[in-house]
Image 1 (cartoon, rainbow, N blue to C red):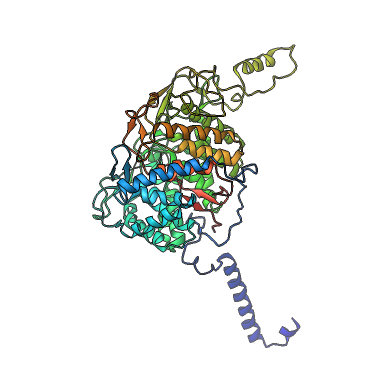
Image 2 (cartoon, rainbow, N blue to C red):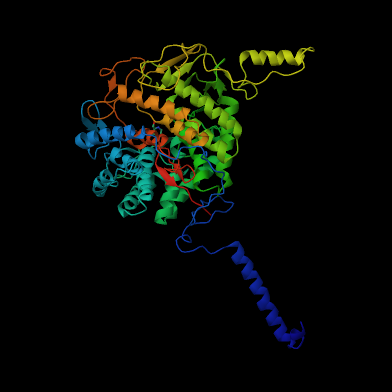
Length: 584
Ligand code: DMJ
């Protein structure tokens, strides 16, 4: 001030202007931070919901997922899973190498996924997780030969993203980014698929012809548009090309803003069918099984992958799960089994079946319970998983049907779920009975009604599953297609609770797969899980998810907690682990 008073008036104005400009500039830099090279070419999220971008280093601000009691040494049973993987990989190499799938009975191959080598690419991350490095290195040169752009036929956009893109990116990360071919091919596939997103709504079409640059129709499914984000965010992160993350984020924004006019009747419950022109829903049935499943899984996993960078993902997830609990979740009376059938959101009616595909939901709910502090969801996760496991344990082969029906169900009620029938009645009496002065103690009731014979399993530490099955519970689609969802949930629940019962359940399932599915060349699907015989009960099909998911989750179930820890990785829906990071 003293100094300023000695300066002529004209200069005082100039000095004042300079100081004012400096203050304005400084506050602009505070609200628009400069990001280090490698980040600044990618967009920064704002309230307009642009996608987040990762920063270096990772100290998660989300709650820890894994339980401290998870084992620290491998369980010796893990070796049997590696042997199973080697057996199937050897068969694939001998009879179907570089094709999409091995036909494990006829020892030939088929190419339902563009013929780009779905099993080879889907298997890469498991080879790395299991430490099968020779096999991994032997597969790498084959990647050079894949020509994603040249394929003149229909490929599924969804399957290409979850199996090929997820497989390449995960292998790139798990191999410490040492093999550039993995990222080059991921980028090439991303470029080949991007035009499928150029629809008026921004929703990608169900199928795409890369060579002709054409989509055969303007239809898609909610699971397909909602299962792009983990892979496209990660692809942007490694290539620096923001277009992938933007396309994926545009879909999330679309879903967040979709309303009644698009065909949504219950907030958070998205019907299965969609068209890509206006993004309208074409039916009203919402499912956590076929055609819906992974859209809900990805809301939560977007939150985990980006370490909570965007409140939008968690709020979409909680809205969906709250509605699911309110409208869709059922209990089998007198048991702890929870049942999650598809739901017609327009007529407010539930279907009677539950898909094996729905058995991913316990793992999702348990993770959400931890990460978002929703303890009730953990109870539900356990009840749903008991249902899925029971469908394995109560069948003649020890394998689970593709779907099952329950005629007799009642709405899930959190107040009565853990009470037995008697306790519920007594609780009611207590309320009206003047002579009683204490409410009954809460007690967990046993599963099922009576005990029966164990299906022809090999060995188990567990008591036999209660039989007969509860009233009105029966197998519908009798096939077992080597699906991974129950094993996925067993791995998640084991890592989250530390309860070894989930390992025992998994071991039983593995033994049943060995007994009924194994062929000379690999593992076959099963025609009828209620027919306890081999050979004629096998289907000539071994989908690539046997390599990517089924055997990987089994291996991890018997691995120490630091092998693909849920606090360091998040799985895409095809079980390809992706590195969790801090995103900004
Ligand atoms: C896998 O391809 C994926 O898990 C997908 O999300 C649904 N189902 C199959 C395996 O059953």
